[in-house]
Length: 106
Image 1 (cartoon, rainbow, N blue to C red):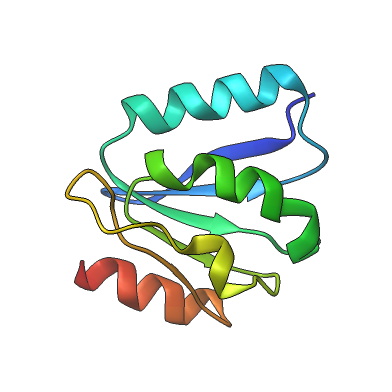
Image 2: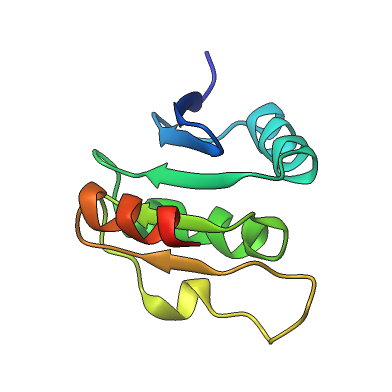
C-alpha cells in the first residue's frame, strides 16, 4: 500500500495526503509525480508529525509544484531553498481553508 494518496480537490488543485512511512518505491513514485504534475498541490499531513516528513520534504522541495502544506507543524527551514527560477512557491498553513485560499490566488 502506498504511503500517500492523490485525489482531485478542484480544477488545477490535487490533494496529496500522507498516510504512512515512505518506502523506496513510494519515494520514486512521488518524485515521478512531481516531475510530471504542473498544477497546484494541497499537501495534507494530518496524522503525521513534522519530523516524520522533514527528511523527505527537504529531498522533494526543489521539484515540488506550487504547494500549500497543512496538518502538521513544519520547521520553516525545511521549506527554504535558494531562490531559483526553477522552483515554485511552497508555504505552510495552520488550516486547510487557509491553504486553499492561498492556492486559489496563485
